[in-house]
Length: 196
Image (cartoon, rainbow, N blue to C red; front, side, top):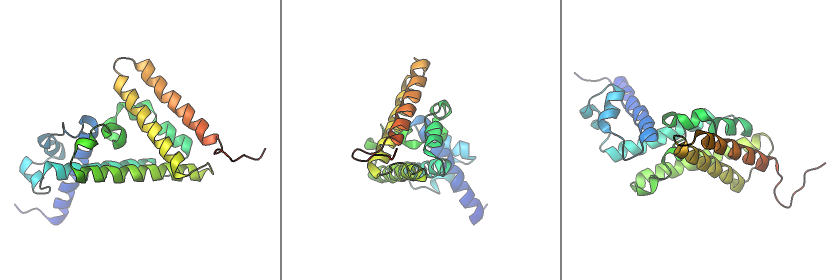
């Protein structure tokens, strides 16, 4: 039975959504085409009618994961941004969260198109962090935004890594990184003074 263009588009979108969740939860190498197809309500063969390879699907899923994450963090103040990113909810639900913290240790071993998709996503998310800083008049040069983003990613990644063996320490990492970034945001850049 022939599938309409609208249905084909919906099917492709369902595949990408399922794959984006799976790579964030399980990693690139543990993503199963069979499980993605099942989650999308399609057959294995139907999936390959949309994507020529598993690597092509992973690259598209990476782009989608970043798009969804950026949309979810848009328009937040720096405090809201930090609170959401470094929350226990974000830590405990990687399949819905930022792909950077979920995938950063794996991306260097992936094919170049996937590395490019990841790089583009990181740049977009770092730019969003800079916009958030700018929205409150905080120092918002690209270096400070990158530092903020890298600290959040590192903190969330480490917190996830030790959560099962020491939840208290895991929670403390989230709190400490949040506190330190808030102090950094409030601090004027070296060589500048705030009016008293």
